[in-house]
Structure formats: structure tokens, C-alpha cells
Amino acid sequence: MSEANRFGSGPVQSAGSWHKYFFTGAVVLLCLWVLVPIYLLLVNTFSSPEAVASYPKKAFPVVDTESLKFFMNYAGVGQALWNSIKVATVTMILSISAGAPAGYALSRFDFRGKDTFRVLVLMTRAFPLPLLALPLAVMYIRVGLDDSVLGLAFVHTTLALPFAVLITYSLFSGIPIELEEAAWTLGCNRFQAFMKVIFPLVLPGIAASAIFAFVISWNEVFAAAVLTIENRTLPAFLLQGLSDSPLHLKFAGGAVLVLPALLFIFMVRKYLFSMWGIANR
Amino acid sequence: MYPKSLPYLLLLPAAVFLCLFFLYPFGLVAWQAFVNDSGQFTSDFFVEMSSHWKFNTAFTNTLLLALAVVPFQICLALYMATLVNGMKRGRDLILYVWTIPLGISDLAAGIIWLAIFDQTGFLNSAMQGLGFIDQPMSLLGYQSKGTIFLAILVAEVWRATAIVLVILVAGMGLIPKEYYEAAEVFGAGRWKRFTKITLPMLKPSLQTAMILRIIMAFEVFAVVVALGGTNLPVLMGEIYTWQFDLQDANVAAAYAMVILAISIACTLLIMWGLRTPKGARV
Image (cartoon, rainbow over all chains, first blue to last red; front, side, top):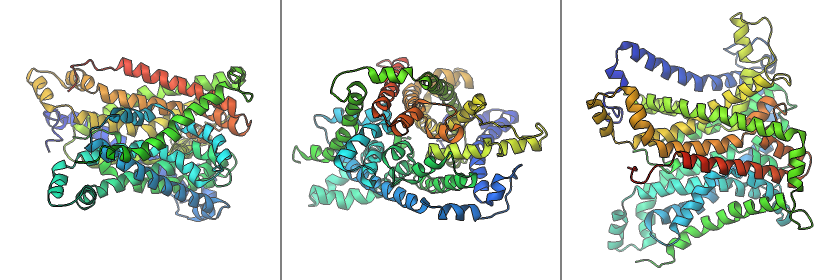
């Protein structure tokens, strides 16, 4: 509760009922501001194609899965969905397997070049990363990675890796080194100590940052659209069809894009704060 | 204790990866923008880019959007963060709801707001239901650049305020609450505490949030395509057009240089403008 009283006496306590109503009103209004647009997208998704094109719209739909079925059976959607999952999974594996060791090294060792590496990681935040897709499109044709799952996953890993490094860095920093030292004195070598003591403790956090990497890749549009032609991911596929596909196809596609991401973000909500390299408390 | 090489071995994969897929491609894109096929330094691609009729519009649109969206987002996120911090119960739930857009891609956000702003969408339906209009207005047609701009603005504020909120809430958590207690003892009101303690102490977080957001704002792409098609050109959209429809990677690279230049310029400006003097850090 001390958390909530950070401002000495919070606004709720100190002010009169007028202020209390204003406060509650603002909170409710801002919640609606976030939730209502998503609800309206779902209304469109679960309406029949005719209802999606009709006017005026109703706020409560007659639930109908025809639009969704149409979308799922639409030529290319299944393949795009599968490509999205493949790219996101490879991104997840790459960014954790490269990011977690780096995060561990940053949190446990002092060595020359540590600051250089940190600057390199932080620098990725100050650059418009989707632009990387442009030169890579040329390079990939030369090395035979063009239009491939792996090629796109590399770009997405560049987006996700800095986050993986920062999250795992804060995870490892949150575990006292004494735990590891105790394991060493009991006869574990460094690797055993890590696997038996540290790894189980950070596993949930690692899983969260893996999920976050998945979401970053799942949502990425520009690089996916530039680097793939036949093997489009779902966002690239939707983007390509935006100008000529019927409304109900767009909305169903949007919902299929949103729902897994919502679920994932719900799963990682505890780690939202360490994602930005800053501790919450 | 441990071999000296261990930390380097652990860093190696990530470092190699970032060099190969972050530093090297940025060198490559610069090369593409400045050097022609016969290997000579040239400004031809920039001339071609800037003489194209869409360049100025795309450039102004991108800048205007960023200038309209980012300050508004910072203020909104500041307000939301103070609301969250003043809460006694349900803080985590509200914070979760407000950060939902964090998981939503720009394309999906564009589609979500298309459901609202489309001619047969919910906004027109609601306004007709309330009797403001007799027939649906075309809000996203090629003649209504103003409303397209507004729609993109709303969608961007909706989508990307969450990230600013997360950074600011985390930053506020680092401010020692004794400061507020002391200020209260001396009779400082809520507004005064906000401007004299919260804002100055929050500078590093504000800096991070603004840099992150302004760079994302210059990359605005899928929201624009979803809501405006090609009716409202922006820099990222032009890159896509040059790369794909016009098959000219060099001019696309020149555009990339423009985005890179304004990104770096803004980053430096924000870093300088919101610098924390040494000795004033907690």
C-alpha cells in the first residue's frame, strides 16, 4: 500500500468528493479510450460480411463467424499465418540465445569493452531499425537469403535482441551473486551453479522476454513487406491487400493479428517495466 | 576465478549479430545512397529524390505528424502516470488496461481505427444516430486530407502512448517519496509538487521516452497506409514505393538517409534539451 501513497496523501484521500469523482471519471474515460476501439474491431470481426458493409452500424452485433471463416479460407492466409509463426519463433530463439548470455555477462562481470557494448545496444534505440531492410534486401539476393524465413528473422532479431539483453540483464542483476557463490563452495562449477541455481530462478523472466521477442516479430510490418515476396508474413500479406480487399477481410485480419498479441502481453505484464532497462522500484 | 575470456565469449554472439545486422547494413544503406553503380560518389539520388513532386509533401506530413503526436502523447502519458500513482486500489489492473496497445502493431491499430473512421464506420453511425448528420461523410477520401491527418493522429496517440506511460511510471517509481512529504510539510500544493519535484526528477525518463517516440514517429507507415492509402504521403511510404513500385533502391536509400538524419538530429536535440546537470542525479 505504500506504493499507492507515494504522493504523501494521495489525491483520493486529501481532496473532497468533487475531486474524487473527477479522478474516477478520468480513469474510467481513459480505460474506455483504450478498450472501445478494440471492442468495435471485434464487433466487425464477428459480424456477417453484409453487416460489415452495412450502414449505420450497430454497437451490438448479431454474432456471425462468416467473416472469420471467409478470412481463414482466403487464398494465402493460412500460408501467411504459418510464415508469421515460423519467423516469430526463429526470432524468439535467436534473440534469447544471443541475448541471455550477453545479459548475464553484463550483470556479473567487469571487463574492458563493457561500456562499448552497452552503447551499441542502446544505440539501436536511436536508429530507425526497419530501414535496415533496404540494404539487406540487396545483400540477401547475393547470399541467397531473399524471400526466406531466416532472412526476415535476422532483421526481427535485430529489433528484439536489445530488449532481450536489457531484460535478462535486469533479471540476472536481481539475483544475488551470493547464491551462485554458495553453490560454488558446495562443489558446483560455474556452469553447474548456473544451471541448478540461477536458471530456475530466471526461467519465468526468460520466458517473458522470449514472448516479447515473439510479439515484436509478429507485429512487424515494414521489413516483412520489403524482404518477402512469396513467403509473406501475415502483416505483410494484409498490408499488400489493404487497397483492394473487402472490408470484412481487413477487419478479420486485424483481429487475428491483435488477439494473440493481447494474450501475450497479458502473460508478460509483470515484466513490462524491466523491458526498458529500468527497474520499477 | 574464471578465465578472462568468459565474458567476451558470452557477449560474442550478440556483438557479432549487432555488427552484422545493425552496423554493417547502416553503412551499406549510406553507400547505396551516395555511391552509384560505377562506384563514384554522387548526389544524383538525392537530387532525384528531392525533385520528385511527392518529396516535400511526404517530408512535411511526416514532420507535422511527429510534432502533433509526440508532445500530445507526452502530456497524456504524464497525466495517466500521475493518475496511476495516485491510486489506492486496482493500480495493476488499470496499468494493464492502459498498456494493452503496447502489444498491438501499427497495422492492426490502423485497421482498428479504420473500423471507426471508415465511411460506413462507427463514427458516422454514431453521429447519425445522434442526429448530427443526415448521411455518412467521407472522412478518409482523397479530398479530405485534413480528416485523414486527424484520423492518423488519433490512431497514433491511441497506439503509442502506452510505451511512454510505461517509461514514465517506471521513472516516477524512482523518485524518493520523502521529497513529496517534505514539500507537503512546506505547504506545496499538488500542482507545485508536480512542477517542482516530479517534472525535474523525471527528466531522464522523459528524455528516453521522447527519443524513442520521435524516432517511431518518423517511421510511421502502416497506420498511414491503413487509414489513408496513398492519399497522405509520408517518408516511410515513399521508401516503400521507390523500393517496390519504382524498383530504385538508391533513391529509397536516399530517403532512408533523410529519416536517419532527422532521427539523429532530434535525438541530439532532446539529449541536449533535457540534459541533467552532473550532481543533480539521484
